[in-house]
Length: 459
Picture 1: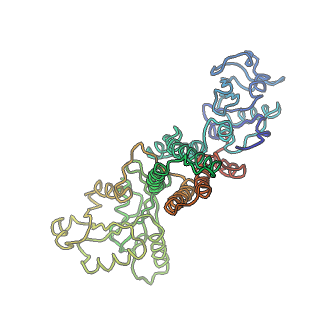
Picture 2: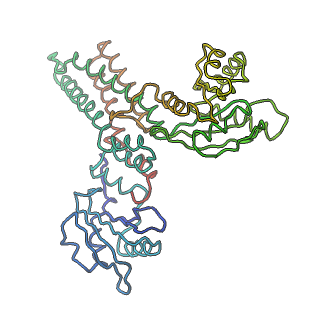
Picture 3: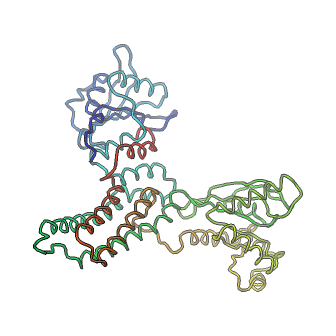
């Protein structure tokens, strides 16, 4: 797959825990000399003779000084994260101590690891495929239950299993079709075209499902930006405070209090919503307020979702219809929210705006806040149920799946046109290529270096 892997047989070292003072810091080494290098400075036991997956307490020292009292944990190849000999040194969390230990390891023959190099070695040794390796980075970056579950599912090979099944079947058909070419003079058919046609159709359904899941996957991974817009004094800042359950934004009866955007993050059922309280949208001669209004319109365009908030008592149906058209021009994904309904009553408000899809709330009183949160998640998920099914969260995977979908369509067209076996096999090979790019069975070192460079050092 990668040809000559020389250059990956040295020993690397890095801090595996976050930088900063803590109770414990863990330094990780991986490579064929990892145990030997550490054993030069750990004389409490002969580490070279110790079994794998064992921990040993003792002093780590140079010839002149004691560096620290540590716990050394051994993971011998191939039963380790990287598939190589791995040693983890648990030190006290002093930055000075950690730097000294790393420096001593480097002086003894290790080199500093590049970002993601431990996981890259795990991939090259066949411990993980590329989708699983990328899921490691997603797991480290996860900040909600949903993003954690999606990453764990992929680390366990959920996404890989779907692709492997399809790839194995396509390889089988491709081999049979290419075998037919060797017997072209005898007009024999080894590959059942009916089964192949059915397989391609099933693959199209599977690939489309994975591609469709990317919208949800992107939401789980990146979060959702929600712009709260409306006229001045509609209660946007009050709504932000009510959703956050804290006084984050200044609330005043004076129209135009918010001159700039305020952004806060809210976790609703495992999805991160980045709430953006914007300046009230109206004509103004105040130069600062004008800038705020322009920013509000820009945020409305770029947001994933817009909450258009209005005073249910003051707004007329005609004004709301006109405002809805303006909002729709800037962003088709929006929710109409009628605020201050406590002043006129929900029933009267419903009659006043009969026929319009509006959620009525009273932000100041906290009325219907939970319903609004539910509406937000429903708008984002749009009926997609979060289960243990595979969810695509990686843009690289999505782009490759688009290529897979295109080649599957070409295979079907070729079969319908009764293309000869050599051309059909060529289309199948192209499909296999794009599937292999996702899992890393087909890639190049430059691509790998780019993917793993986005990992943190020590992982």
